[in-house]
Length: 116
Image (cartoon, rainbow, N blue to C red; front, side):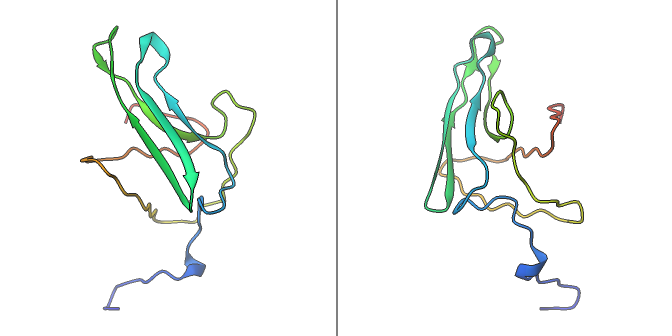
């Protein structure tokens, strides 16, 4: 390592979810209101969560709908279980895509603010 470089050790990392042994149930949540036609699915196998789908135009709004991968709540009785990460100063997310995609939106917490 060079000067000023911090190399994380396993002890420095808090794993939020390990898909080789997930603590939470992950599901797809799409745009069911106002005639939304988007479709997606979530499968967990071989240590990986696979989220696949297609975001379609909502005819009534003439605007894109949404597809999401969620856990905890959302009309289900199970609550998500996550470790306390309040002492963390960074977040590492490991993702791979099979399509040309330029960004991801991540949201954490019990309340969601979609205003960006």
